Image 1: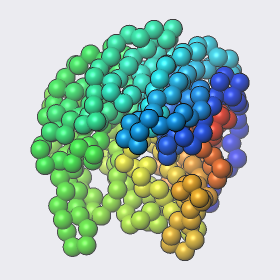
Image 2: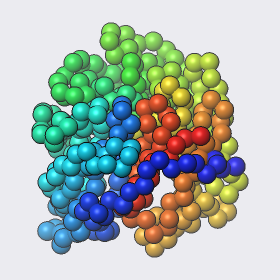
Image 3: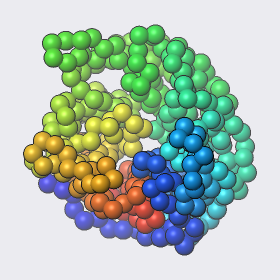
Length: 346
């Protein structure tokens, strides 16, 4: 039912590097995108280094000091960057390569080199969405009028501009390495049908692709869409290309479909994807006093076969959790509070 116990290749406690957090810092955030593998399997990890301060007002976001570590798989810290004040509820980290990383902050993208020197910035605002390509070579920004800027992942220079159809919900646009996929949604009896087209980034040319009914979805590499119907009790499926796999969650758990509307953690080469399972009582999720789901698990799936490769339980007292899959799909990093573990994928 769950994946086998995996071999660990790295364990580290980030408290020894200044990790500090409480519920006031996080303000409901699980820090889902603050760890990423570079292409040499080293890790970039961002985390808060101070506990919460009193809010100035209910409407003003709070900033907290943070740090980014560059860690080799041996556990050696090969770089340490103090990032200054950040809003942790709106922070994402993308590893460009081993030579640097980019932070997606509340009002701009910031690119750093391996020595923590700021290389470039790109302005954003509350109306701008940001997504990385799976291989991190490109970053995409999209505005509410569906205008897309394609940025170089290192320099943040605009390499191409594209316009998507006005009727496409910008929150449903999916970004790959070579293409952008977007649906035209048509209401049907009891739900809706999504008719996907895909646009080649290099040429801007679009063509029809696949249809999906009554589902939540995300892109898996450039050639597949992963989706699940219903409220998470239904199987997770992939379509597109020549593969067609199905993963069925255990009878006492359901898939957190919110994962399918966020940045996917996946390897297009291995067709591996991460899902979160939530244990249920009857058909209703059980909650603790903080609003977190009880019994949450992070499951790495092999979508060639529809099987679980490994499962990591998230303790119910965890303030934060985040995870990342290496570019080749062979290593899986999980950060639970300050505890960082890297697993060798079976």
